[in-house]
Amino acid sequence: METFDVVIIGAGPGGLQCATILARQGLSVLVVERGDTIGAKVCAGGIPYHALQELNIPPDLHEASFADQMVVTPWQRARIRYGEPVITTVDRRRLGAWQLSKAMQAGVIIRKKTPAMAVDDHTVDTPSGRIAYRRALVGADGSASMVRRALGLGTRQIGTGINYQVPGQWPEMEWHLDKKRFSSGYAWIFPHRDTTSVGAYADRNDLAATTLKVRLLAWAKERGIELHGHRAQAAAINCDYRGWNFNPYFLVGDAAGLASGFTGEGIYPAIISGETAAQTILDPDYQATRLNQLITRQELHNRLQKFYTGNKVVCQISLEMLVLALRWKVIGFEVMEMY
Image 1 (spheres, rainbow, N blue to C red):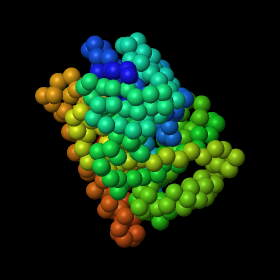
Image 2 (image 1 turned 90 degrees about the vertical axis):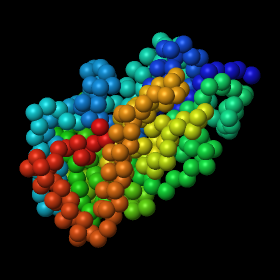
Image 3 (image 1 turned 45 degrees about the horizontal axis):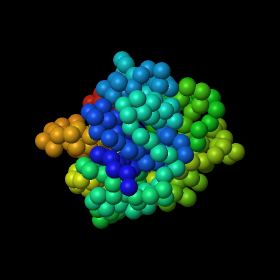
Image 4 (image 1 turned 45 degrees about the vertical axis):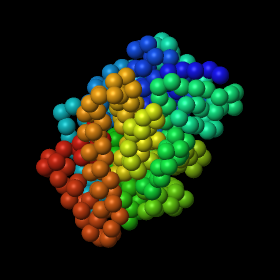
């Protein structure tokens, strides 16, 4: 039976970030990934611009950056201007390839098409055999995390994201807040380098995925965006945070339920939680300052999401007031971000 210091389930942004940090400190690290590609996930690809700088993601991975954000409601179309980029889009496959390269250079062993079938305090079962770990098991295995289930953690607050990647670059980055159509969620138009992500997000308890798709298609058609004929991709987004440090188990990203319940944003929380898990494995006294700040912001986002599931008229008026506050710079756009 093979033995490693740390086994990580899932080769997404959080898992690879965790693996690279650990391997650079001399630990033996195995990452098992059930898919046959790294980085493939349904995702609008938007990350706060300052977060990209903080994470040292190179400029050649930036698809498109926008200082102006268009926020559209049934009553107003607001252009929110800033002096520097607010949101940048990235391609998850290209981001994954970059992270994979760094991980392999650090000595991480990556095994694709290797699903984890069962876990316990010392081993992970895979189709090719049982693997042991000495120090920690990291669950970076997404919204349906096996490690999360092994810990007995339920999931009540979960969202659905539906995305179409269409050819051509839309001229502006747009957020569409329409309580009647998308309930507490929203639709987006996020330009990339040569394509545009068009999609919608909503809490599953608030709006069924099938209904969300129908409404997304109708909304897009009204705006001259024909999505029929393009492939729809959907994914669950876990916003139900219940802890991340269960030593020797650790949860990162969607496995920990760290996505925003308000926007569905998950890339930045995944990377920060992956980094924090690694540092904590190396030093149990590590102060998780950035992750704690992110968890506080997520709690705010989840409260906002729950508020906007209420009375349609009251909530739509509240959304209009939120957009006005953004236009008048009473609040900053960071209220929409997990950064």
